[in-house]
Amino acid sequence: MSRNPGRTVYVGNVDEKVSERVLYEILIQAGPVMDLHVPYDKENGRLKGYAFAEYETEEIAQYAVRLFSGLVRMNGKTLKFVIAGHDKPSPNGNNPVVPKLNPVPSLNGNNPHIQW
Image 1 (cartoon, one colour):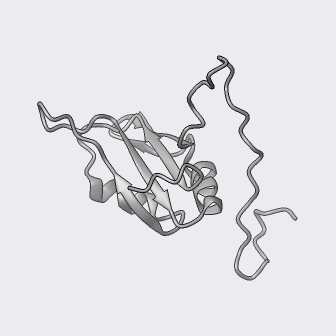
Image 2: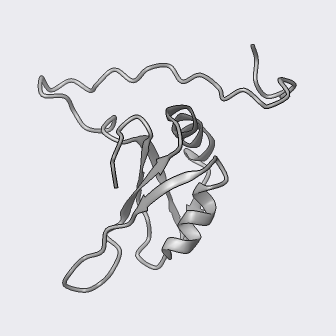
């Protein structure tokens, strides 16, 4: 995975019983997923509880975070979605500044959920 931080979404709190296929099917609802990395524990073969999804553009990745955050629940767990690297403290101990996310415009410009 190229791990372009601006295009990569960290997905946390993933239940070990969730399959890669199911996770992928959810993630593509926001847009094209270029790569999905789901780490497994080498000792027991179970999911480690997180994944990384790289989207086609930074805008789609930001849209995915807004779309899914607080809404996706699987096997009793609410999944966590953040742009990769934005949930870790910076070297000076402060949280990094997260830019204000802009909505992804609709193709026809008539999306009632987006205010211009």
